[in-house]
Amino acid sequence: MGAFSRLGHKVFMVIIRPEHKKQRLAFFKESGLDAVEIYPPSSTRFEGKKGVGRYVNYLACLPAISKVASEIIRKNGIDYVYAYMPGIGSSLPAMRVKSKHNIKFVLDFADLHVFVKPKRIADSSFRNADKILAITTYLKDELIKKKIDAGKIHIIPNGVDLELFNPTKYDSHEIQELRNSFGTRNLLVFAGALQDLNQIIDSASYVIEKLKDVKYVIIGDHRDPARSKSVWEEKVKQKELSTHFIFLGKKPREEIPKYLLCADICLDSFPDEPYYAAAHPIKILEYGACGKPVVATRVSETEKIVQHDVFGCLAAPGNSLEYANCIVTLLNSPEKRNKMGSEFSNYIRENFDWNKIALHLQRILEN
Image 1 (tube, rainbow, N blue to C red):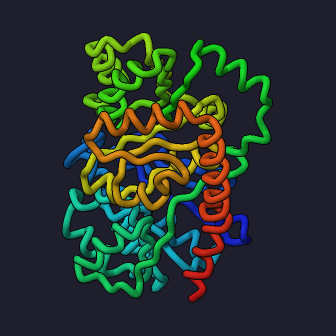
Image 2 (image 1 turned 180 degrees about the vertical axis):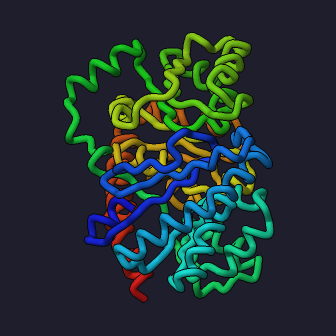
């Protein structure tokens, strides 16, 4: 939306929060956009963190949402109401705004988690949306299976901030000092939500057997306690690999490029499950923007980004030996790594620039 607003479009963000706050409306700027957060009234007594309480609190916000939206529309004349994913706190109020003000409704469909949300609202959202933005072909195909009109489904992939993830803006001496601080000849970096590190960890002993001077830098965490940083650290400890793994936890987004630029190879490891097959991982786009080859698993949409043996190496999900061999081969081939990283960077910059994607969105809405 930031790139879309830079094209001259006015964008307003209305964020519905399930938790309670004394000041029910909070107005502020978010990445240059006008935003308002709406909290449920004090008359609702649910804590709102999960389950039924959260849904009740979202519903309690509907009158305030309607009032705020009406005021925005009265002052600015809005053409579209946009919802990120179907849900009680997103597409439900968007559909109410559409009905009340007779404006078009755009639905962003970004992952398969929608199918575990209230089915009635999800199905109604797909039917009522004037345009649906799916981030991958996989997701578009899932909608078509649900008998949703293919003509209103458009592919709008994730993009990357090419200014932030621009290697030329960072001091090479500073990057080298950061790399040296890890004290290793071969450096592998993962940066993102710690969804599933099993293949990275399970393959590490094979890699270390071939190349003892290697370290894995893991950046990120997960809100699910079963996939948190501490859980993965314990798995590494049980496998007696702790000296080769460095878990840094979450880092400010603006610091991530420096760690990626330190890497010889960047890693991803999605398992063979529909949710991951449908994903369009931003971290891989960021790896490419930094000119780094990738070792990842061969799942549907990842395979479309990381062309095997061109931008990196893909291994079958669950095949730890194949994954390890990909890493070892690339670590032993610096010229090949550099060529892959350079070509991957060109590909990412040509196809996943947020500014170009915003232009694509503009054309979709104009038609």
